Length: 263
Figure 1 (spheres, rainbow, N blue to C red):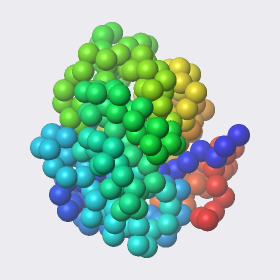
Figure 2: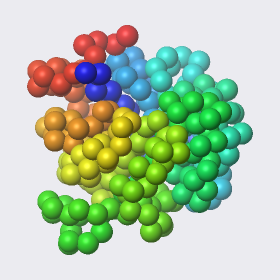
Figure 3: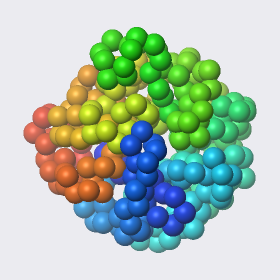
Figure 4: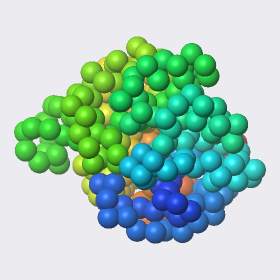
């Protein structure tokens, strides 16, 4: 069984690291480079950079931030936000990214998934899905069974049902799914384990669960119940609610398959 990867998510707006609730109401945290270096020193498995406004305002992606990080941070980096073409992917990889996660541009032109996978390999092509529960009342209730993919930081519905979209994207060449629950993101109320489990069961590629971690128990739940292959978190790290050492020790004590120490 492969290791469950622990991923630090860094949402960026311009030069600043930010954090919001349900991808809105953002608060400036600090310099993303400082946080990335700190998490690297503490033994994070991967970094996930998300340009929070790139698609909304047609801004450039995180090229310079990634380039600077790659000089002294030596763990895999995935970059999301504002990736609109094969050329964008090529430039990000040249800057130091290992993978790119695409949402809006893939929804608008699904053939881009195939083009990126064919050019750079499926392992590089991550489909980012911002999922919102639809129907059956409040998203916090257990038992809702349908989710809709959204774009532009969860603002715009696409009409795409999440499970069908995930399966279609994998058939086109996506090698991994970054699955963010917009309903849970930033709430510290726990992951949408049902959503994660349904997607993980529907596709033969790794699924990264993102959105909702507020306690150590939430990590165990999304791995054991949700069958997540990787877990991305931001709030608990940025605000120092939990340390990476504590998270990793808890995971090991719980019998989860994680790395025992930094590489």
